[in-house]
Length: 151
Image 1 (cartoon, rainbow, N blue to C red):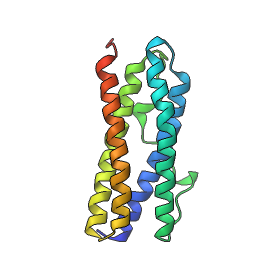
Image 2: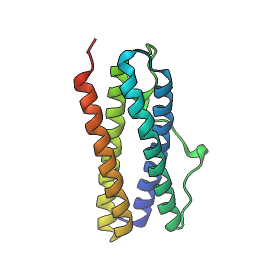
Image 3: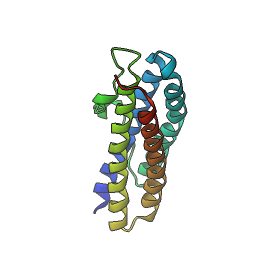
Image 4: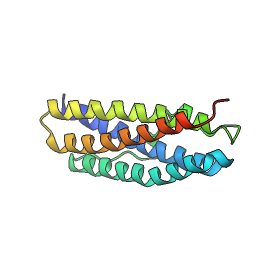
């Protein structure tokens, strides 16, 4: 892997983290009902962690003499994490979170591999640290998926 590939993956992850923040914030606002409260609280907690991930990724890009992208570089990809029309449809939000977490995990695993191949231990460390957080989020939402009523 080359530095260009690492920069591409860092940039992709940076944008994905910020899209996740937007979708988590929106879903934490719009979900309704007694079953939604625990999921909303979890989304609220995860928002700051996702912002921290974006900050770390942006700082790593800067260290590699690149700038993190601005909003004009943004193209939405998290279609399954859009707020549901039925604001009590907590299950669809859980499924959307799980899909987003799987995508993030895949990106960070690719980044770990690319950084290892390029002998870039700093980026590898960043990716491993964030990967652990994303896997923890996935585990939490898998638990929600087991607990929530299926329609």
